[in-house]
Length: 168
Image 1 (cartoon, rainbow, N blue to C red):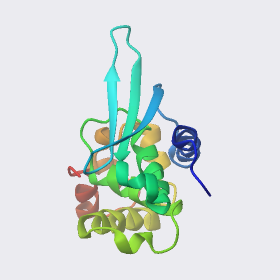
Image 2 (cartoon, rainbow, N blue to C red; image 1 turned 45 degrees about the vertical axis):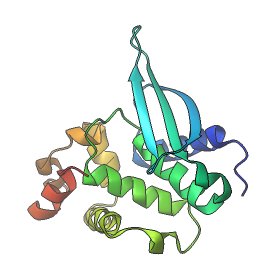
Image 3 (cartoon, helix red, strand yellow; image 1 turned 90 degrees about the vertical axis):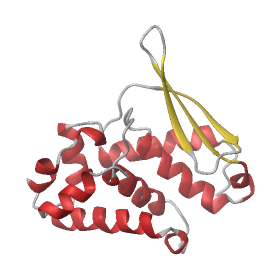
Image 4 (cartoon, rainbow, N blue to C red; image 1 turned 135 degrees about the vertical axis):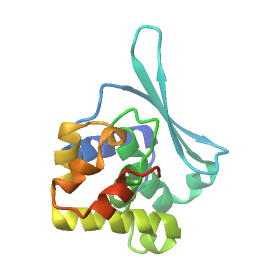
């Protein structure tokens, strides 16, 4: 599939992420930009009138690397669900998992060691409780507000719960 309109594709991916992981907080998605950034970023900005706007910036190199762009837009869609300013291993692992769900085969092999660890931890949580992310976000929409006790209540071991709540 060719991504001719990255903003429309991101909006579609956000809707899919909401269906899978629960609704997003109100925010106006304004742009997907291609910039000279090392790692793609999701930026939230609170305006004077209280509205929150969002922009996703991905690397210029992705203009010609459609499989990675597809993965990255899906990954960033998870970050668009809530205005998190402290990214946890849980959020990063869920974003990685969702990105891989929308990437061609083989994309997982390109992940760095740290992302593979986050992904393994999220998969362990989902093995214990397949609806865990939706349940957790139903209680605390922001990943950063989810506590280890919330994860343990779903049947996860304390060490896994603590790892998932650690900064990512």
